[in-house]
Image (cartoon, rainbow, N blue to C red; front, side):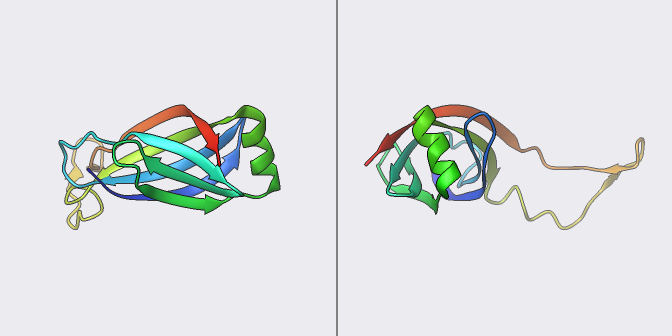
Length: 117
């Protein structure tokens, strides 16, 4: 299950692009099915599984124009797992190349249709 969803950045590339951080409760969780909607100028990401609103943000005029024109938005998702990411206190360097180990994060990019209320 999805624990929290944070919208970190909204910008315009070819279409509206939304950067999202998704925190999952368990490493085996794979239930993130987003649905995008706009009500007024509020952009909302909700869950198709249970219909709950996960995150929302207000869009400016240029961003609204782009999403109305394309009727879609690009989601750039970075997945994190509670207990695995964000809590590494001791960094163990890799002797061979002098760099610290990093925890793996999964990234996902998709274009989703937007519904208007």
